[in-house]
Image 1 (tube, rainbow, N blue to C red):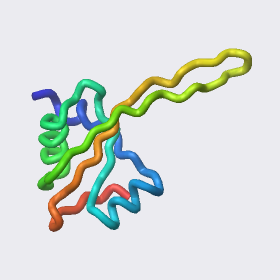
Image 2: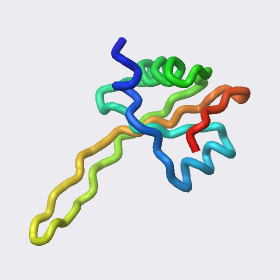
Image 3: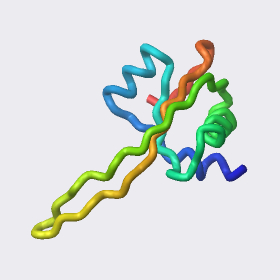
Image 4: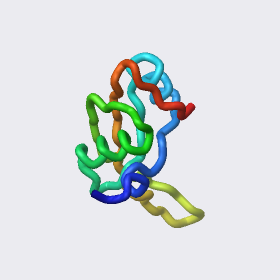
Length: 93
């Protein structure tokens, strides 16, 4: 297994993700594009010392950005939504 800090890159903090934390105990993370659900589960459990019930992943397509006269594409990135055991919490926010 790779280093867990190389798999889980950053937490995703938005209105939707903070609402999911409060309502469903689900946390969102930006992860490596080549990471699978098993690696993400093991990395989150090791980093935060929690029990993971479920992992959902999705690949977000990069947006078009314009810099002066040029248009470029932002890179694609992978997002993981991790549902924790009801007794566990992560202090991110």
